[in-house]
Each structure stands twice: as C-alpha cells, then as structure tokens.
View 1 (cartoon, rainbow, N blue to C red):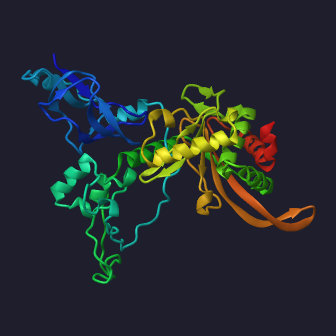
View 2: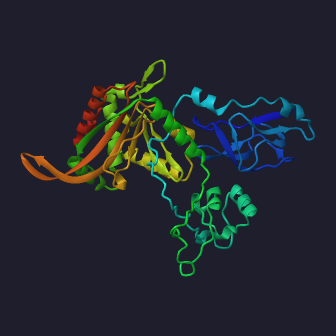
View 3: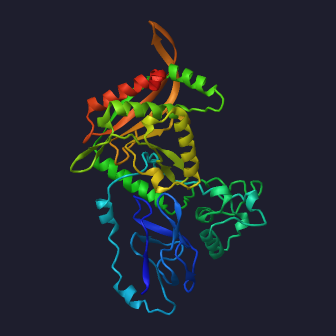
Length: 421
C-alpha cells in the first residue's frame, strides 16, 4: 500500500510550509532516512527525511509553492501502483484560522518594525552587485534559487549571495536587478522627481508569523508599561574588571540576563503564563533573548538562566546569535521561554516599549546607556543611566507586582556583586 507523506509541522508556530527544493523526482527510488525535500518554515529552512522505502509516486507541492500543515506533500509506494483513490479521498487540511485559535502560543518575536507612512515616491530596490565568491567558477546557490534564475534568465555569476557562506538563496534572485556603474547611470539609485515607483516583495513565512503572533498578543493581552532608570556606574566598572581577565568577554546584555534571572526567582508571579482557564506559575527560569535576523527576529532561549554564570550565559548567547544568522536554530532552541528580553541599546535607542511574547506575561525592553547629569551626595555630577521598560500582561501581572520586579532588577544591576551571592 502506498504511504501518504504530509506537510510536517516543523515548528510550534508553523501553519504552512514552502517547499524550497525537492531532492527526489517522481519515479525515483526513496529509502527511509534519505532527504526527501527542503522545507522552509516561519523560522528556518530544514531538511525533511523520508519515513518510508519505495518509489516517489506523487509530488503534492511544487518547488517554491506553499501548502498548509497536514496537506499532501508526497506519496511513496511501489512502482506503477494506482494512487488515484488516495488522492480522491484525501482529507482536506484544517483551515489555518482554526489552527491559529487552537494552538498554544509559545515562541514569537517581541518587536515589530515601526510603522511609517509610505511616501508618494518610493525608492527603487538597491542594485545587486556580484560578489567575488560567485564571480565565475563554481556558483554556490540553493536548488530553488537555481530554478528561479533559470526561469528568469538570470546569470547566477552576477548575483550576490546573502545566505550562509555567501550562498545564493531565493530572496537574492527575487530581488536581483542588473548592476549599472554609477558613471553610466547617475540616477540609478534615485527616484525620479514627480514619478511614482515601488517594488513589491513577497512576505516570508517568518514575517507572516511575526505579523500574526504580534497581533494576537497586542489585541488579546491587555498591556501596560513600567519604565525605570538604572544607574550603570557599578555595572560598567564590574564589566570592565571582568573583561580585563584573560579569555572573558561579557556584555551588558549578559549582565541583564543574569539580573533578570535572579529577579524572577524573587518575584515568581512575573515568571508566569496566561493559559486561558488558569495561570501557570513557572518555577524554572527560561529567558528568551531577541536576536535580529534578515527576515525579522528570532528568540532563542537561555534555559535555567538563574543557575548559570555570566561567562556561560555570554558564550550561549553568542552561539545562539551565530546560529540564528546562519538559520541553523532548531525548534528546541526557541521554545519554552518564560520571560523575554529585547535589547536595542546597541542601536542608540534610549527607550522603547515591546509587545509581550506569548506565553510569557512580561517582556523587558532595554535601552542604551546614556551619560546624563545625576545628583550624588547633593552635587550634580556626570552619570551613566540605562532606561528599561517592562511590558506586562494585566491578566497575569498587576502594577505593584511588575514594579516590585523592576525594583529587584534595579538592585542587582546597580550592585552587580550581589548577583554572585
């Protein structure tokens, strides 16, 4: 009997997948454990293995096309087997809207891009400049990128790759425009006055999920915000002393994670989740750390952060950041958060508010350290202050509870040595 292979659910937030590439074609022999296809989810492109031995009899989703989870991806059976009955009687996948309602929120991205009114004149897409790694010789490109380039008549040697190691991926082909030297086309990168122009970009699976999950959080969880100033003088001195030691490199973000973890242990009601009919009080501390990637944000999780030292947290966060940018994060890396941190201080942002990252009840937005006048012993002196804003789900956390957490966090950040006790 032939076996039906369904579109897998490769992440907790996935409702549909895109077939980035097929490694087999109809009529090919397939063995259990062989890579059947590459599936693009909302967070990464992952290899999908066959669970069956046989012959690939049917492909249900063509390369570059999307399909809902649990729809027919392929059929594997014996050569010449009649599969018409399987195709005719295949149940339709559940509507996406139903899955959105029933799915337990887990991992998402805390901050959308700011909304900006579209101007009348929109700049053209930047011209693609060929990279040296793809100039002649072997071209490093995904199967989907090669197929699209062939269809569009694009020479891949002229396309710059933005994938891992300079690999050309689908978005590079989609956004490719032949490069014209500036002296030959002085207005190539400028919109012509009085002429309306624009470019349309397809919405990635990640961006679709960001839009859906953030809308769910913002419009179902009643948010309120608490902002506090942190005196960073002692933290700056402590970081300087730590980084003077051989082999140690600790960031302010690492110190924030450590302080948050300790503050959550002392304020467990903040380390909670709204579950609809009940509130879950988490005894463990798993802190999600927002990491920017090309198509949006991912939130890898530092597990049991309260039990880890600054050096271990630092190494873990750096590894997650690298894996996120290389699209190598696995579902186990981004699931299970009980609290989330979003830090835009390195971009010069003084303060901002973030959207709660379900299933958390709170998210802490970290601004940059700014030198400002402060009063010390009755005298106005230069000081370094960091603004933080706690976004809370009022269904779980009340104002006094959130304020108590922030005060505890402030004490740890202003006295970093206390985190070692």
